[in-house]
Image 1: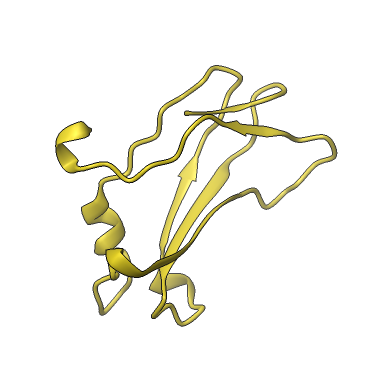
Image 2: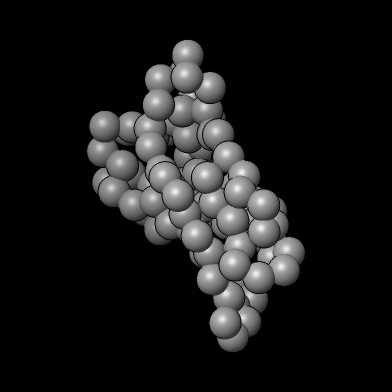
Length: 92
């Protein structure tokens, strides 16, 4: 679950890449998330992460970075993350 400490937040982004990532935008998983002050569960299918890089399959066993960020950072913005986990497809 994730939520914003203040009012509705502009888009936040999640970025996931593996050890073979070449620092190109198309070689990683990217998704936009809309956060509000209400706790929200975000579920991302592992197959979507695996298939994200163009021209190759992401190595789920070699995930090297998971980032949650915003581009237009404003003063005082806070994001609360309650939990983050990889779960089997049946848990979705």
